[in-house]
Length: 284
Image (cartoon, rainbow, N blue to C red; front, side, top):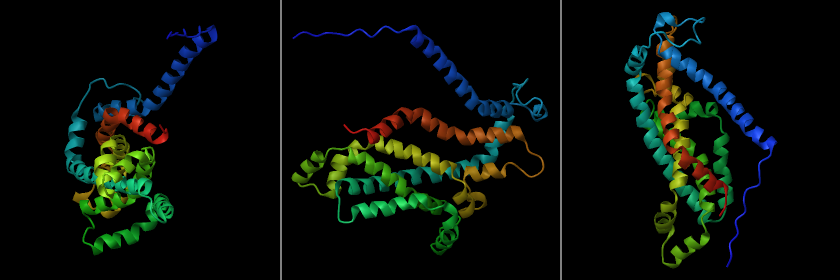
């Protein structure tokens, strides 16, 4: 058996010129999007007397981290509240979405399509339209102004999107694997634990990043359901702006601190996030 290799086609002058132009365009676009980040970082490192409109674009003459210390001291309780909210809400909603998606994709029952359609309607219900009944319900079950109540809200509101993501993911798994497990006597739960769950890591990464980011940045539920010491960091960030004198360096430092966890999640898990999205988008 003979093997043959094909050398790549020679690149013409036009294609050689396209690459530098494309890189230059990408650099310009990246600089455009990073401009607000530069202003935030430079402002956060300046003493208050250097923060003026005329010096907005200048790098600080003397770097000070005092604003970060002040912001962290003010935001620490709310930062802890946010971690107490985001971690359980993300894990629970991912597990619920995984089970729903598995049943709807692999154990289809009568009216499964209708149930899935009604679940998807939940994604289009505006937050504002359910606030009053939601608050009354949480008051009735003694979960108003608690982190547990906020976790419950985000888990319920996350069911449609997590179910959709996992259903699309499980639809790519060959039915023959499920059939083999059924022949061996495994039921719904046994097939899920032994077959579907071990294959679900890319799906959990995608759903986890999505839910973590959404819940971390959510503001309306947080400001409506919780008060004072129970509020997450996004509400505290808004309250930090003050009413008469704004300490812009502290404000910018607090915004960067609030954004850092979600940024780290994307940096550490971004590769898995892309793989998970492709696993749900491409069959085979």
